[in-house]
Amino acid sequence: MAAVLTPPAPSTAAGPRAVSRPPWGGWRSRWPLLPLVATVLLPALPHGASGGGGPADVASGVAVLVCVGRLLYLRRRPLSATAALVLGLPVVGFALATVTAADPAAALPGLVRYLQVFVLVPIAVCLLLRDAHGFRIVAGSLVVLAVVQGVTGVHQYVTGTGASYMGEDIRAVGTFGPSDIMGMATVVAYGLLAAAACALRTPRNAPAWLRPCAAVLAVALIVPLTLSFSRGVWIATAAAVLVVLALTGRRQALTSLAVLGAAGVVVVGGFGIGSEMIADRAASVTRVTSTPDRSVSDRYAMWSAAGAMWRERPAAGVGLKGFPAHRDGHASIGLSSGSDTAGAGQEFRRQALLSPHNMYLLVLSEQGLIGLTALLGSWAAILAGAVRRLCVARSRGHVAVDCGLAAVALMTWQSVNFLYADIGGPTTVLSGVVLGLAAWWALSGPDRVSAV
Image (cartoon, rainbow, N blue to C red; front, side):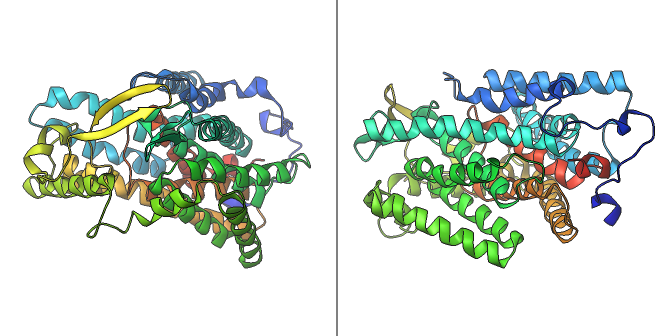
């Protein structure tokens, strides 16, 4: 493993690897990253439909095509055997759930979507990233997207032009609107974690301003994240931050926790930004049996329905895209017909509840134990590999520790957030980008990871 993580010694031999590339330049040789950058940034564009087919999905398709074209032109082996197994394992569950569905034709769009997000986009990210600098470019794009959406969200809260929440149009949703209520919170969390990783372990050859700028951005993004009122995103972000801090060392972890605590006191206590609403929102998670709000009771009712579907067909599930069709036959009478959305430029509308808002239960109900085991096995291998490589990188003073911290943080966040959310909306494709970044760190070869 030492050979994997030790930075290569400078070489004077002739050939492409002897050419020294400027670490913070060389865009001419990095044009294949442009589709990935576009995939990250384009979800910020207002998109009418809540499903797929948006500009970011088109960009991800271009990234996959660029990846295929480069493989055919350069005639390189696409992936190592281990990477191919880990990233390709979920295909087993996807294919089986499609074939065994009551209506395979209706399940086919679900198969395409799952392959895009959990297989093709992660593979494209792994293959298009040449080195750690490429990783930083894509991670930096996540920060840019988070800043744009965060500023928009704070403006919505201050001016009362956000989504409706407790009778007031104050919920920060960015450009995603009330129909995709977790979109802004998701991208802000991604950017916060990427900025925090850079602040904790700034690259050695980075400009002097990068570390303080990254630290300020990470703290500042706490504000729009808080104003999103998205409980699941709060929990996932806190878990990811704690994991990353635990992996950076005790002294730095304590210092960072003190800074974050002070920032929280200033934002919520000092400025009084939604303190009463935030406290009530956080407390509502535990009010399940006493006086739960409608969103909590509906969520638990849908979780129960997903479990009932799985018990009916435990091996292969009810088929991809099968949850909406089977929901009413398995849900309790207390489940409402939909959730109310309004504000942020949108009239009042009733949005149907078509998923359990838990990715693991969605996979279990639609793909059964086979699909869930395949998907969880792939994600667990990526997360375990990313943590293991990060620990070794820290112990050996590796130059790309910032990439490892970002990969572990993003993968941890995605794993925890899927307890309270599932795929859907224009930010869905970003889940594939995040999985690809984590997989690149966990599974790429030594020459690609060790390069600055």
